[in-house]
Image 1 (cartoon, rainbow, N blue to C red):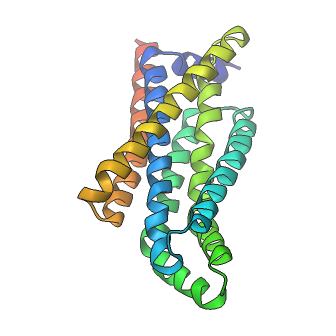
Image 2 (tube, rainbow, N blue to C red; image 1 turned 90 degrees about the horizontal axis):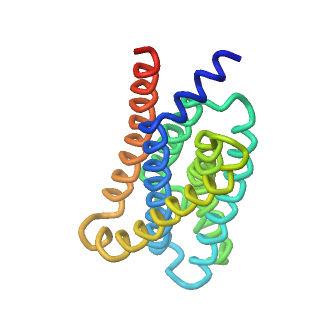
Length: 216
């Protein structure tokens, strides 16, 4: 009980709340950046038709929906900053196959499945389902960490999803307008991985700072 009360006080410190909102923004930014890059990743083998984009969008929506569901369930089981930090670390690690394994995965699928619609769908599932699902857990878990009282839960959820969606919008514009022109695909992906790891570091730093303030 005392441990839960300590966690609540840490989560509700100003620094910790701002850090949670900041990582929700970055998480939304990264999700849309990776989604837009997905079209470029799949294009050499499956083209860039509406079928390919339909596969990418469907996989991302399914991944996020399951991430929201599982993240919400996890937030009910002793929510803490360590679990929250692990989301970003695992998401970063799960993005590595997009850089290192995309070509052999798509080549195998391309040679095995003649229809490019289903080839692009399976490629999107294998490359993007896991990391995007983990990133989808961030938003509902963030709401749980930010909620002070039941009466404020609606306002907290609205603010959190506003910040996250704003990040997604800016990630869409930044990637489509600038990143794909300035950098190679893998360079942008490395930037996304670094951003996720920085999110983990920010939450770790803010929680430690809050604990120090609480003790002093």
